[in-house]
Length: 115
Length: 116
Image 1 (cartoon, one colour):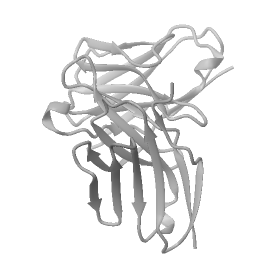
Image 2 (cartoon, rainbow over the protein chains, first blue to last red):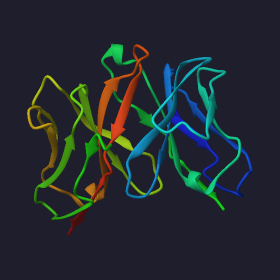
Image 3 (tube, one colour):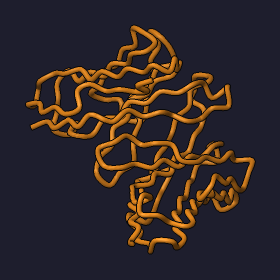
Image 4 (tube, chains in turn blue, cyan):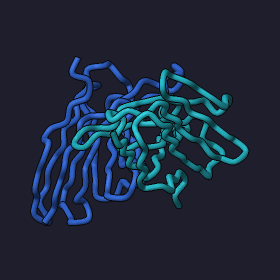
């Protein structure tokens, strides 16, 4: 099992450019999450998904869009990148809390720099 | 509004001694707490967790203590080993408005260095 994978690992964008980050998981998890991590701060939730076609806003959703067309994939889009979106982005997946399983499994991260 | 705080950005401990990492939270709705470990250029990996109905959970060298009245939890590592050098994040969980989904709120992290 590969677990949670993220593509790309690194990316440099100019202000105003757009890009999509791809997350894939092979654990058949219902739930998927996108976080960002900035220096001196913990991970902050951007958006999350509870199943195909269903997404919800997290703590810091502005400037991002997401889509979950397949259960195993969760895409994070930046339509018009800004320097404030320079960050490390982590994807995670999990089962439902109702199963008594609270662990989220994280990908290796994507380091994005916006100049 | 920082709901989960780790007030020590860094901690240095001698190999073989006990490492104690602390975490405070403010939201009484949190019902589960997790510790994650993170190495550079990798994603966080789960270490140990505790339900809000318990006050202690132990797994090998790792023990997490929860003081619900003080809204405080701590992670004890004993004995500390060089491979334990990493950033440790405390995270608190509560259910989202969508049943079954959870929101994790993370602390800022503590960088633990184990000296030989």
